[in-house]
Amino acid sequence: MSSPNAESTAFRSALEVIRAVEPRVADAIGTELADQRESLKLIASENYASPATLLAMGNWFSDKYAEGTVGRRFYAGCQNVDTVEALAAEHARELFGAPHAYVQPHSGIDANLVAFWAILADRVEAPALKKAQARQVNDLTEADWFALRRELGNQRMLGMSLDAGGHLTHGFRPNISGKMFDQRSYGTDPATGLIDYDKVAEAAREFKPLILVAGYSAYPRKVNFRIMREIADSVGATFMVDMAHFAGLVAGKVFTGDFDPVPHAHIVTTTTHKSLRGPRGGMVLCQPELADQVDRGCPMVLGGPLPHVMAAKAVALAEARRPDFADYAQRIVANAQALAEGLLRRGATLVTGGTDNHLAIIDVTSYGLTGRQAEQALLDSGIVTNRNSVPQDPNGAWYTSGIRIGTPALTTRGLGTAEMDQTAELIHTVLSQTGPGANADGTPSKAKYVLDPAVADKVSRQAAELLTGFPLYPMVDLT
Ligand SMILES: *Cc1c(COP(=O)(O)O)cnc(C)c1O
Image (cartoon, rainbow, N blue to C red):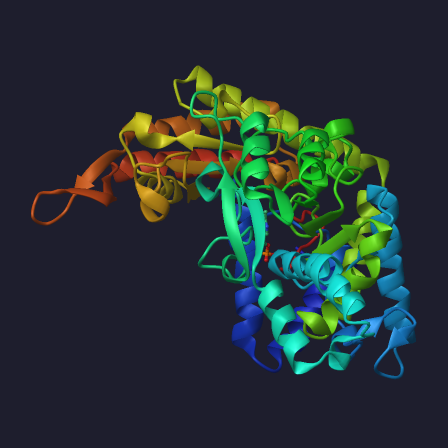
């Protein structure tokens, strides 16, 4: 059946044009939509961007080099890039109430790198230049330059530990941030699973970090950013918040007051593609005193900006400023809570006992499983999640003991709290009917599992049925 709406026409025509060059790419794009339509997606970091956002990325803006900032480019002919970059920044400032927005970062990791270098430039490099009475680094003597480089590479960062839900880019060794900084982390209270602010304050007093980082990718509760700022101030640290996961909840005014990072942090980083529901990318918001350093992100750590993605950021941020986005953000949290309650009622164990944001962590050890086993068994049953460490995880970072689930994507499709209860039932059915498997030599395996294929099949069909009333991209018909 063909439908005449603009979205269907646009995507169908685009695929036709691609098909004429490399049909396998056109096929893969079409199949990706079909696959996404069929899967019950509970990946907490994923979402579905609007057709307008997607289409804003597929055009000749991709051809432009635009190093520099609006009105101050290293290339000629950037007037249209200036238009979309200025629009995206304006929407970001208005949406979040931020004095300054830098919309060039290509991803969340890139946004963090921009922020780290802006802080280092402000706190370490600028004072060294002043002391040497140099205007810029090229004016330093060899000896002063050598001393400055050593000092830049010898700063401290305090961030949330990985197994408590922190992110690799907050100073962990496998990531560049862990090589740049001497890092120490704060965890959560073993009894409650919650951040213990007294412990954070104590760690800050002992360690005296240059940067205190808050933000997470797997912590199911609100963070009190007012208290965190007080802790940062008490030791002279710059307070940075990475809201990559929950930016949509800030934009939608679910997190306000002490729980809104923007008025409390010196600098805030985010992705644009998670709960914010924009294109794949990153962004930095900051106080005026860091703005100049943040704007040096490209070419400091970023390659040339992606004007087509900045255009899509402007579109998505405009969408997030509409009143219905606040309703969307409320529904994300209501859904996460319904899902969590549904699981708890059926006997599951959740880290911190529930959620007040968009995600929850199931501790699957109570089902006798590792995260890896649970993740695969759920996937066999048509439910897409990801395994995740729990605090003090007995199975380590690879196998893990947790399953992270999140509701931004399903909420975009329109599923509500009743469907979340049904989803909880499906998850509980799979986990309670899955058993740990054994290696060939009979020893217990942390990866293999036993699940009756009939159960997996039945749940897959139920999951697909649950989705039939909530079509993904209903306005897009590729047939
Ligand atoms: C997802 C995430 C990132 C990284 O984002 P990318 O766009 O994948 O680089 C950084 N920080 C946090 C807290 C995240 O959740």
